[in-house]
Length: 173
Length: 109
Image (tube, rainbow over all chains, first blue to last red):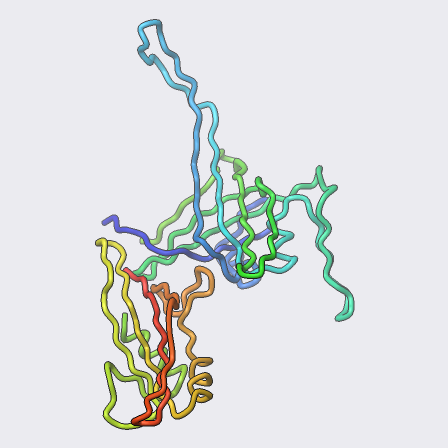
């Protein structure tokens, strides 16, 4: 029986162009520790309509589909930022004295594909999973305010997989 | 809902957690809660805690151990979203105790 869904979930990000098994994807290393403001998955489409002079719709053709995933990242470091940013290069400091470095920009031909998985746990403990492969499509903004925590809005637009799938949604029975 | 929160409070603070009031002078936490809204899918409760302590310093130490509030969207009590939105403090001169109030909004299904 269908039931209402309440609450947020966990976000996992992995730089990869294929979706791995759940055990490989849903690991502490891939999990964004804390997100804020929930998450949203948007499906949009465009149609071309064949309409005659009497305004009767004779046919409708699907011309475009878009899937976009959005969430707010509350706890982050440069590794997380590297996953969120399409054109970036992360270098880990070689020892304790060297800083970690993230270079953003100039990676126009090398934008990375990211596997995005959002896992919502329902009140009965069963999980709802949404998975897509995408690119960051809206950049990001880092704001440092004296009275507000820094939340990075992560937005990923889905890429078509081999069979044309943009996003897969699974619900445990 | 309340049993999970009380259990968490007892584990975190290691002092007695009692409803409404106490008839002895002791370091403890008193609680009361009530439903404030319900739309059929989402219930919101008000949880009011009172820390009874001998000193303000002791109250501050107890407060440090209370960890109920969500971090971002991550709940501390599974299935419930808890935010703190009020509080206060007063001294009871009759019993020579400090009463520290903590108010929470609890959202759950």
